[in-house]
Amino acid sequence: MDHSAAAGILSRPLLGRLPLRRVVPQDVHSLLDYAGGAALVAAGLASGGGAAKAAGWVLGGAALGVSLLTDYRLSLTKLIPIEAHEIADYVYGLGAVAAPFVLGYAKRRPAVAAVHVLVGLSAVVASLFTDYRCQTGMHLGGELATDPEGIGG
Image (spheres, rainbow, N blue to C red):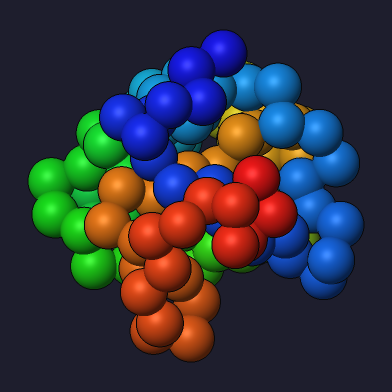
């Protein structure tokens, strides 16, 4: 795994313990975010309408939007601190798992529900094991920290 300065600056642990282990490289996680967001939107579009379509657009759009704006290497611009991105990963992942049941389309649109649940579970599991790193040193709270050793590296 690349731990050089080019790989980015280590994120601060959430709640003092998340992620559980840092084995998934940040760039791999970034690609998974884009693929997962696109899959949520596509499944929603394929549903034909209603709550499944709305959930796909909202959850997939959130995943794609946050990814495009996060302070990591594969984003369009660096506006969102990496720790905020990690929180968003957990929220949208759990939301994707719950949406088919809470919004009632699990039985009416089982294929869409399955995609949403699988993408949600994969987002949560990947987040638990991602080596989150930012590029500019922006961290939750707005401060800049460019020394990986000072953050726990």
